[in-house]
Image (cartoon, rainbow, N blue to C red):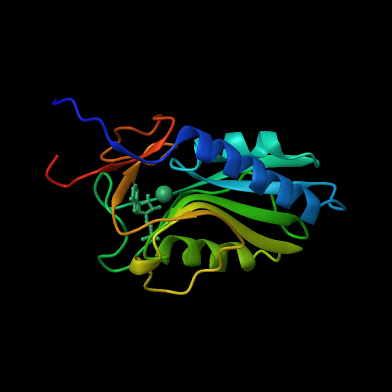
Length: 179
Ligand code: IMP
Ligand code: MG
């Protein structure tokens, strides 16, 4: 395997500051909520969720879902088909829920999730997304708390992978298809 060092797009410090800011906003917005449920989407969200959850000053718990993807790292842009392979442990009916996602690209994954979770009738349902690629959006997706908007490039790190590589990079970097 060749040595690839992804080029820094968003530094570790920028991410740390942004996660602290998002945690502050969410803590303020949910100040009267006694059990906020953070729903992380595996695998990509595990690092962002861990960092974000520890910035919150309100009572919160975490749960996870996993969705199928095509290939190793492909986006869902082929036909937008998404399938759940692991569901939440908890019943979210009547609970306040924030879906935590690493990235919104075409928007199919998050819009599928929101439809699926809304059907369970939570008290409220919002989304917190680390990065989005606005140029790539194909379906409208509600993003309530956003870290960064980025151009149409393939990013890795902070949970994001390229064929399972680079998920644990501490910064968000760009890999080029020819790498
Ligand atoms: P969607 O196109 O918004 O449904 O996103 C589908 C999935 O594609 C995301 O959850 C990621 O797993 C993956 N994805 C899209 N763009 C990137 C990227 O730049 N890096 C890593 N994964 C990505
Ligand atoms: Mg993902």
